[in-house]
Amino acid sequence: TGSLPPEGAAPAAPRAQSTPYGMEVTDFILHGLTDRLAASCDYARRRQAVAEWNARETILKRGIALTPVKFGISFTLTHLNQAGALVHVYQDGSIAMNHGGTEMGQGLFRKVAQVAAHRFGVDVAAVKITATDTAKVPNTSATAASSGSDLNGMAVRAACDTIRDRIAGLLAERHQADPAAVRFEDGRVHVGGESYAFAEAVKLAYENRVSLSATGFYRTPDLAWDRIRGHGRPFFYFAYGAACTEVAVDTLTGEYRMLRTDILHDAGASLNPAIDLGQVEGGFIQGAGWLTTEELVWDDSGRLRTHAPSTYKIPACSDVPEVFNVALWDGENRAETIYRSKAVGEPPLMLGISTFLALSDAVAACGPGYPALDAPATPERVLAAIARVRA
Image 1 (cartoon, rainbow, N blue to C red):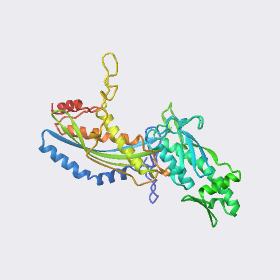
Image 2: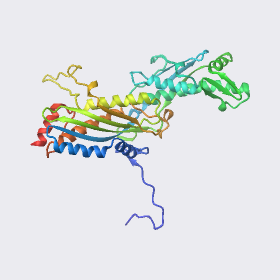
Image 3: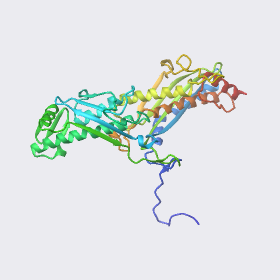
């Protein structure tokens, strides 16, 4: 009747956790990540300090919350997980390329240019990206689902590697060397005991009628999603993060301010840490606005009244926490993404949940009742929640 293994038998390996939609989670790192953030932001001591503050202060209440995030990366409409690229290399060593991603300030073009520069071993200044154009790369997927760098970076890598292998094959034949031993680095191409400037190697390839243009294509592997049953593996991997936010609330007006935020976010082996840190900072602030000030209001006729910056309150520079510490988790992606990096577009937005829960914590300090704070937690709703916990 029991299911214990025989005495002396090795214990069974623990089963991988799985999501409600049946996907095994094999890359879970949140325990270590949240523990490190809790230690670096001094969470335990600060929570005690908040409790002591709230015990002696009657008007200004404080709250603190540490919240984790696990965010799946891929389009759940599986056929969108594909990308193409077109790369040209010119006789002067310059590189032009086009891919299916759209630059909208998130740094996509810079990251993809870095990929091309690294494949050819040249400075990123040698790479020029032209605006997305379906006459050059057809059937492009939307630049969405935080997958722009994953998809287009891999497509560009494939195209660059095709050209690089052609150049390597030519030089290896001339020097009776193994093409796999040809190295592209520091603006030069090394083969056997010889070294060519990259532009020199390219010109040589051109003069020997070697094609210096190639297309690249990438499709995300290991995806299987049944949209009807809501079951399968819709994501290639998960991105993780955690945020700790401390707030102060004026119990007379319901107004509040973020005092401090500490974030540790998982960007894998970041393609560009400066860009990724900026994405995390901006994503958090956007998420905080989503859950606090960004309220949609319709009138009795069904017309949206919060339709412009004058009526729809998004966060401003003054809403950024006075203390804002952001760091990237020092681990590479276990999935085979471009240089083992991870998406860093939408996942940080969810870190704004820590702001909402810190406000709820502050409201809970106002009385014995349950705060029942609704999002968006506007000052009016915070004030109403304070009244409820005191009732």
